[in-house]
Image 1: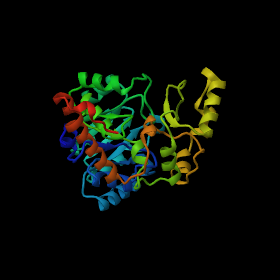
Image 2: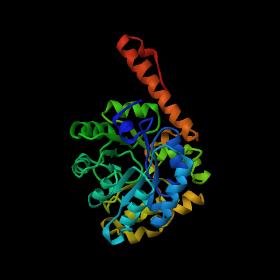
Image 3: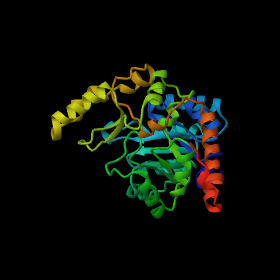
Image 4: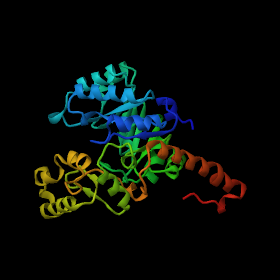
Length: 333
């Protein structure tokens, strides 16, 4: 399948693996890239630029296909040494960067000078248009369904994606609720040129996380995520667990007086405990509503091949069948 995204990044299938803290290691990125998608190493999971350089080299040893690096831009008072991280990316020969968080505008000259294609994660049309104006090559449009930070507008992808298609000139991928061939076809029909999957790629054989995490995703339903930190205007969608219940109780008790310090124990230093040690009640970790569509733990190649087979069946048999009068009887599970 050829789209603006496959052409932009030089990949076989229009499927991007989003950057995820303590998930996006070389193992997963290489597996996704080898399956024909665009694998992404999470830059800031690597504590120093030197460690990122080693992770990039490790990924290059595992794949000869294109892969990228995620850089999440944090507030200035806690900013990592971004120029050094970018230098590691450039020196590692990486040609795709997924940016997230704050605007990457200050770092765009360095990225573009190195010939790097930039795809910025956005939760609104206005932010997507800003990304286009500052020179981003593509946008990942994240609907309200997504895991992690869905923004504060609460617009689901059935509305957000066609609105993005109406306004943007650069290509974009759909993120949030993406899991299978149905997701891909829906995203394409709404104007996207591909899809970004985060949560779904955690439940794969190559994802370097504890088996408890993968099992939790298979067991979860679409009703098992919660929104936290709403009153702080830092909304995050996470998987329900005992510590998340406690966090929400604190939020109710504190109301408008809530500060980040009040929920420190539920959000600080959680990812290594959950992702690496499998302590599923340790605290809040990002998870999309798409958990309700996760029923197995395939390899990345099995998953990507299945998605593309499903998408082709839907397009060629079911949708074309509606036009020739034979599609009503066809069903794609």
